[in-house]
Image 1 (cartoon, each protein chain N blue to C red):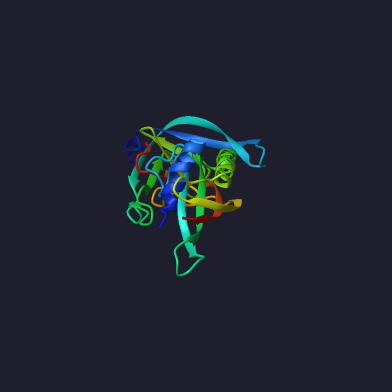
Image 2 (cartoon, rainbow over the protein chains, first blue to last red):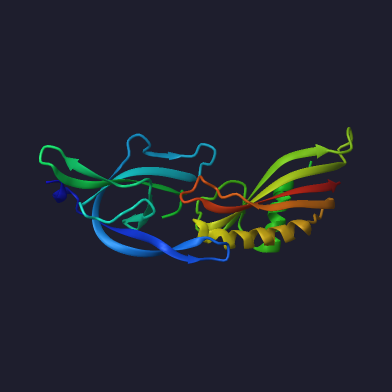
Length: 117
Length: 126
């Protein structure tokens, strides 16, 4: 079962409406939730460096969560101490044969300096 | 010809104690100012005596997202004050006109990194 394969410890940084700062920006409240996932480098984007800016590295990953995991587009994911932004809405995969839910899938992205953790 | 980016980098570092770079640094977890020479105008052709330099200073927050706006603005304010006081040892700065700051978040980062941009027109004669 796919749930046996989703076993990598990680944290989801859940963001919700927070407080407004002096500029009218709503700075979200953050809650860190421990969970498990599995994630793989996204083949189409993979990793790359901005050609005009050699110190900025961008990577895109696909993440798999167990059914029922609460995660949304505004959240972040921490795996092995490295933070990634959820990119787009996560979606629930369904197995047509058994008519059951399989897992939750999401894309995450990270843009960082080459020395940043 | 004067290397205005070099002169400004040294000056800004001395005056403001900020991180001044020519390209995005390898570590983006603290604020920085990226200095770029946009153009140079020779005002006394054909004699290379009075030059007008157009420089852009991008002032970045030290973290992504809207929370960095205050930090980036504070940096831009300090840089603006320093630019207006720009002076050199081996040439004479006759005028500095600063435009900005204007806020233009850098969407190369995710979430966008708050950034304020200043432009300076610097008149220098040797």
